[in-house]
Image (cartoon, rainbow, N blue to C red; front, side, top):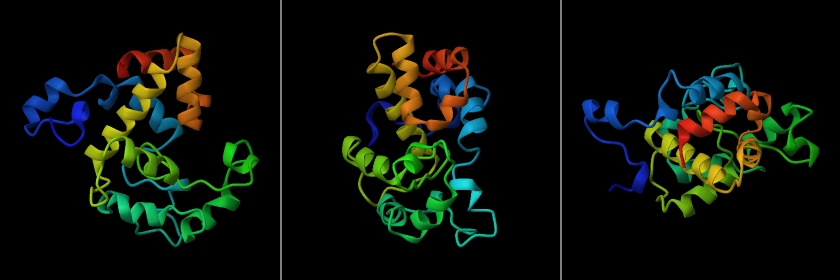
Length: 182
């Protein structure tokens, strides 16, 4: 297996179609739900700052290494400072007087990124490309699901990882759990 162990993706498109987890397929409830409440592209920053009239309008996180993103996502950095006053009133970070630094399709924040690098044994020169982001998503989702004893606790765990899942119906999150598998 590759660097991502069970999350490695095959090299041929034909093989990939056969083994792509259901949760990563574009037509899955998982991807449709994430697109509604988190992000639609692998380069997404908070409030689509990567495409708006912001200091981050040309930032492409898929072209950055994990080490570069660790620096980029520091709360005291330009991005963290830019996000802080723009956080929604109902977010955990704002309630605690903190900022948030979501990056990529799965809106992985800096603290989570650093933790994933250790847990998944990812070197700092790893690109934050589609493969890496998908592997991180699967790692986080499977971990959240495994920690739950029943459907309600599994859903609560997913909602703790992805704040946007608070806006997804329980029935859809049950399908997400099924698609992710654990």
